[in-house]
Image (cartoon, rainbow, N blue to C red; front, side):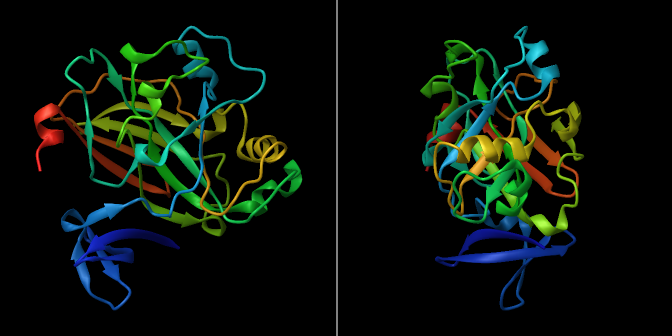
Length: 253
């Protein structure tokens, strides 16, 4: 099952796809997808983000692939929804997308074995974890300005139940800028798979429902400019649309 969350008529509603670019509210009403104010598909808890988790991406950046997961945290201010605006600051010279499979935890867990790890997953979504290359101190210690800017990580539009994704390690990832494909890859190329990441994270901290693991991005990064429409899509999970805006477009009411 796919389900999302929107803000409509002063309330938060859970919605499901209705075909023809529409969504269905719990009471049966239909709304055009483009007319909805989209929220992240889950109430997000702790967000764990993986760096250099695809060998081709590490090579693209001229870095050696990590021997243990390279993980950093993201604040809740960074997360925004489908069709949201993401700000490209005036001083930025290179701001790229990162199409990522988002893994949503469904059970409180600690010290989970790799064999049991996938039972802790509630479902999957799509994330686009933007980075401004200018702000980067180094790739092994992503600083706050790179990964915790307001609205720099769209998430959605859907949460897809884990039971409906038979093999999350064989999903096609695609990014398009203004309709032109700029990135293609597959989750099969992750260095550390989902079960390994859950085992690793739960070995030193408790994971809770709503926690999200952003599993990294493959090679194929490209600069984005104000006015660009960026689509990050994962086969079977959904297509996340995001709009890049400049200072005027972001700070206007």
